[in-house]
Length: 193
Image 1 (cartoon, rainbow, N blue to C red):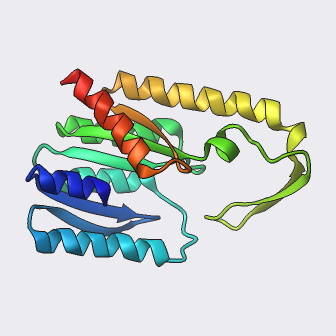
Image 2 (cartoon, one colour):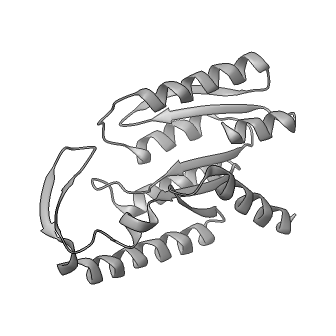
């Protein structure tokens, strides 16, 4: 919604794609006020929706790449986690967007405290996958060091792949306010213009 406001003030056209295991919603880029209100309505519906669907970023990005015909600036908000796909397939989908001459900005969403630092204290915890419902019980302290190492490798690899394919990589701690995330990105972007 904040990005829509920025684009509106710049008099740029804007569209929206929402997906889970399929492309759930797609609106091509337009610049009217009516179109903006429709997109904001879709985002609001997303907030109240109770969904436990798997995501299929790989397939959906290919679909989006085929639907967007003119050169565009694409903002992608995702955690980049997809257990049933090889990492290289996800980057093939991102490359498809780049091949079509789109500029891609990957906002990599995660929780710094929980998903990156694995800070759950020393108690026994039950983890539930919100997409599949699978559960696992463990003492987090027994796995913390190895987990942190693997996550750090994943983040570094993701950042390097984005650099390799000329994709802007913006790590986004979901516990920060959107104003902090956007202002950091916009300041960084302005330095390169």
